[in-house]
Each structure stands twice: as C-alpha cells, then as structure tokens.
Length: 129
Image (cartoon, rainbow, N blue to C red; front, side):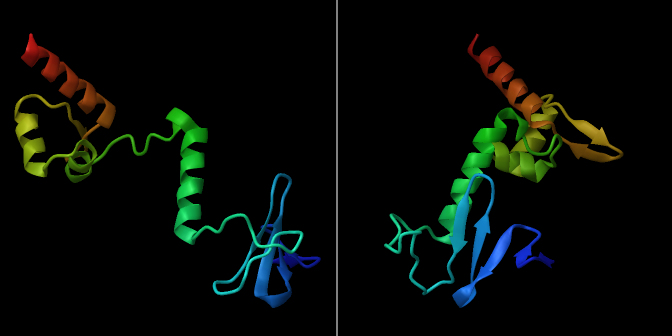
C-alpha cells in the first residue's frame, strides 16, 4: 500500500526501478542486479554484498542482539535432536535406553535440548570418575 509515494514499509520508488528505504537509522537503496550501484555522492560503493551475504550479516546481527533469547524451539523431535548434537537417530534411541530425558506431548516423544546436553555432560563426567 502506498501513501504519498511511499509504501507502508518505508520504501519509495526511484527512477530505474530501484527502491530507496528511508528510516530513522538507515538510508539504503536497492539496486537491481546488473545495474551499477552508486552512493549518495555518485561514486562507486565501498563494497558490494550479494543477497546471501547480506542475509548472513543480518542473521548474525539479530542473533547477537537477541543473545540467549534466540534459543529455537523448546522441544524437538528425534531427528532434530540428532542434527543438533551431531549423531544419528539410532544413537538417540540407544541414549534413551540409558536414560536420556524425554518429554511426552500426547504420545509423541520430544526432547528439550538444554536438558539433553546437561544429561550428556553428566554422563561424560560420570564415565571419567
């Protein structure tokens, strides 16, 4: 939706199908691929980022800003847990037989990653004593 030439996200249409965003802290300009980018004084930009690089920078900044608040889902299934701790789903089954903590959601078995990691640490410290 546009109001006075600006859409509700703060973007304005600029000549040549580029869009400019003006917000309280940043002014950036989207330039379509293949078109040379220029900064406010008309010179070439100091650096260019691909969409993937920009996404990675944003994800890193958001993760750092959120800190411990960005913990992911509280409960995960067996396959997700196996990916998180770097083992196979069959190894998770073996760990369950040894007492790996689980949470039941109805009949579904779920795992709380921090509790699992703590349990694994305790098992490792018990094995070395």
